[in-house]
Figure (tube, one colour):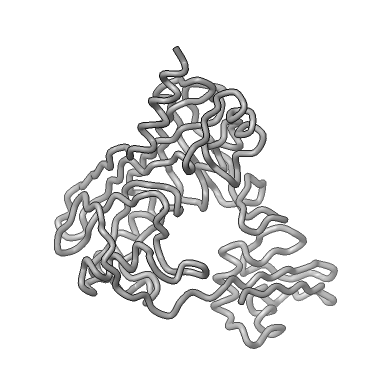
Amino acid sequence: MSRQATLRVEISQPKARLDKFLHKKFTDTSRSTFQRLIENGDVQVDGQTTKATHHPRAGEEISIHWPDPEPAEAQPENIPLDILYEDERLLVLNKPSGLVVHPAAGHPQGTLVNALLHHCAGQLSGIGGVARPGIVHRLDKDTSGCLVVAKDDAAHVALSAQFAGRKTTKIYHAITCGQPPKPSATVKAPIGRHPVHRKKMTVRENGREARTEIRVLNSLREAAHLEVTLHTGRTHQIRVHLQHWGCPLLGDPVYGGRPARIFAQNTGYEAPRQMLHAHTLGFTHPATGQPLQVEAPLPADFADALQFLRVESA
């Protein structure tokens, strides 16, 4: 079970890092765990995310959220996969919307990891632990498209370094609620965890750097079909940046807000899910050193949405 705690710093700690300070207060939680919680935004100081190197000051209020623990080990399940590319070191698949990437609280089975364990017969990188074998990066449950999986640790390390070093190509297709203010733009707005709604992210001054390049492919009826290129990889980055730009993702139940309600009233269209698709993924193959770029065709529900909105725009 997840738990939360709040404490107020009584005496300034000019020589104590935040992670060490919290470990002394909560000895059942390791210092490395606190470092991970701080990095994930699950520790806030006066309602703001911070770093493990922060020195607690008298009067500050520190809130801590311990997420639900993940399952110990996933089991193989015979779930069909749409493989776009595969060799002995890695594979790239077209993840359908609705498929959770790895087991977690509320989703102990029926995930992509369960399917991969069956497909690869256990030949997956172990770096992600028993709950996330082979998983180098992730997509939201309701996002479809390209996802790369490592079959061994060397491939995992090399691919992870490319993602961390921003040396991959990640291009998405999206449908928005409302027309964007410009035909193209680069959104540079830092993203951090929402100070009140813990499961949401938001644009905030002390958030982590985030950059998204947006180009309108087609204007639709009270909507637009976009090509979106990610230059950083923050949680919910496209969804948050589109909301910040004034045209949230169609079908987004978290960030849609008022524009989504207006869109539904004016068009009569209700999206089956958030209309976001990871169309293109490019990286350097960890074994050959050659560039590899894979594309996932638009899924039927995405194409249907485009067709409906185009027909209605006449």
